Length: 485
View 1 (cartoon, one colour):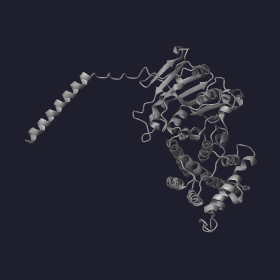
View 2: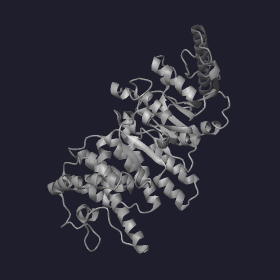
View 3: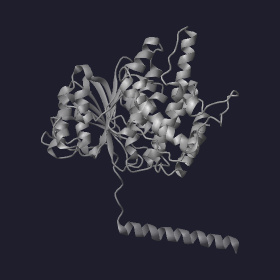
């Protein structure tokens, strides 16, 4: 049901003049889906309040509730076509009344960590791009037909929302920044092992894939007590995101995963001076795939000890600073980080090795990130003690990765299992930091245990084999002629 509904919505948006890309599709789907979900949430809270014998004050005023403006119902519980707006009237109401009303929540909310504030932020940033009120009417009707009251339904909905985010990444251009392959995220989490009571932080949160997967992992591992559930909901996951659409998608994704008021701030992480990060705002676990290839302005670079325009290298400094002593990090970065010879890269590697234990480097194969040809590694490190030796693992799924054959959990199973003991195999090896050249701190991937490839044959050998095969083929043909004759 959910899958067909999402496809039908995309088909309607494709026909509309206002939404013209995969990124527009998910943005528009998100705000409608969010308001439908909020309607269900309000109903659930009202029922719980009634059972507990207390009054419940809805977040949304009567005129702006889903069952009043979006899909009013008659006494039989069916869409009341006489009261339901459509055409220009619907677009006018959404653009001039609904969005401004919801955006005002940002100023009226008690504090940022409330669902009211998140509503205000989302509708301050998004705009309705559906030009046709008739198309919008169809979309509202489709979303109204969805049900996600049970945990199973919510899980299916969040899974399909993730699929839409993945498709947006596959669409190319800058969509890929929102999507890190979920099997890779799950492997990173399995190695870092976040525990209840620890905080998990992603300062380049994107679609919140790391935080959502960490939530699922920690929920499955923990004792299901009221205190633990509240801790997981309110005091565990933190993130920051600069770009508006990514911020909205991240908020929506976390809410669909069951986190009602996500601790995600809409801000440029790199605008924060490193010196302003103190023990009170550090974290035990950092999971991230920071944007790379971007160039930051000089005034942003002034916030960092090691000056560089490369966005990912500034994020690396932020990661190290934002970790508590003993904290663990797993971050994706371009593999050239390990070998670049510019002063900033060398200084950053030296800083990482001296302040953290870079215990593991996972070398990812080409094609791991759909729509992006960049080769990457994953760095696993613990803050507070210098690195003595690094365990490398070269991931080789035994096939070419791409849209029709993406990375899967089984591809990473051996890496996760071996990461605990860090043995040397044909795919893995160790590097002693004492052997690293301190002039360059080159940590590039060079597998000394890889089996040697067979030497290339000489032209003479190839010609000899071709002659032999021709003779063999001729002999077979002669035999067949003899049998037929």
